[in-house]
Image (tube, rainbow, N blue to C red):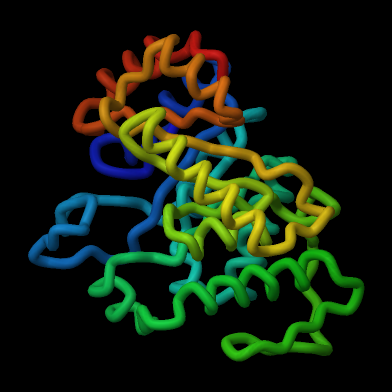
Length: 278
């Protein structure tokens, strides 16, 4: 389930109702997206109007954590270059501890130039910056004496506790469809997160991931790359769709109940999709 930190579903009562319903219906994960600011007037690449409300994903997921017990809490995605890696590492570890180890940190390099410029991060080099940030966060979460020295972030003789509930740190899910995103997923992610119109798009992206696996090394600590997929067109997913995704190795099929204008319609969407094998 994705997107419910935005538009008509972001209020406290709606969040409690829908999060508890999703958990009762057996959904495995709850995903929250991010935009700090949006271009005004709207530009072609922007997914939302500048006046559409969207909550910070970590604040939203903290609220969801407090009213649920089992469902995974995922960012889908945090725009990593716009964040301080040490502050983000502390926030994510805090949420992971308070939720009992339920956090999946989905990250992306960002693509909206007006947003990144407003936040003060250049578009150029955002992929390399994101790679460094992930390495720095992993060091802070896992090293006995955390230390990291790079172009964009450098530290030593510091520590941060509590560590995440999971010994190896919070699971990282890398989003995106570019060659750089595929390489980042293979080399630094426990999973990959993508979206598209259907099986044809997914197959194309899986080819990109396979190509990346031949180009970069994958640390053994990451295990098998998990595949997370969100169908956007159409947003309704059939049992036949789910079967085709399962055959392609999808681990989490994320549904997105657009247009998020009526919480009652979102609840009905959740109920209709509850029997999918994910």
